[in-house]
Length: 366
Image (cartoon, rainbow, N blue to C red; front, side):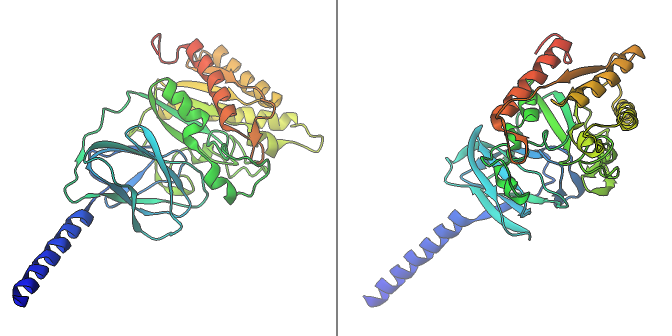
């Protein structure tokens, strides 16, 4: 009798272990799976390790099963996790090494869509994405077609939405990471309004011809041809992703970097800025034939005066592919060392949207 009971217990124990293995079993979907949609500039030279570093990179994938995870090497980025169009959670790892993380579980055993988007900006870091983790019987399915419209945003920390969810007026650099939410920045809001996918080629502290301290080697314009923001190689292949519209919002750091002892930018440095701006416009036209360009000037009068002068000269020279827009100052709407709040980002987006609709950059239809 005891032997029968022992055999029965062992059978139950084996069945339990088997059920546990089925429940916890998982499989890795490599990043090269063709049904995974990548947005932003990605280095895909290693089929098992995709790399990115510019702000605003995001991934969309449709999958089946009760959970989804990621294999990452990244301890500086924060990510928004959206499941089926709804905000699920914010993910962050403190480990720089490659590890597996479950980012959503206990889901209904059906088809789901995940959007995994980087919230913040960081220097000299190259996050690595090495695949998705699914239930053992989970599958990756084709997602909805990618939006046909495309917008590239070229800018600085304003475009990167730096610190827009902060409450403090003054913050240390690293403290801004968890309170930066690119998805609520003005660039994604503009793209959403026009039903467009987007790339944000923007660098905090960078300008058109210099950085905020006047260093002419740290410009966004000089990094425009890079796949990875701080790495000269690999070069970005502009044929991979051709925007309909390029929105340029640079000048804030140029103003800081070029300003003289009299708290004004000297005439020769203003001319230096305008020449650099025109050179960059020519570069954009070279890599994106037929693109429309929206030159946005932030609230500082010097920026608005000089950008508008550039665009007026372009128009006079017969360039009808470029348009001027600007946004003003919003009292009380800045945090984290002078950066727009979420509400200010909305107001900036509205002003740029109004200009883009006025110029009909996508034609007559929305």
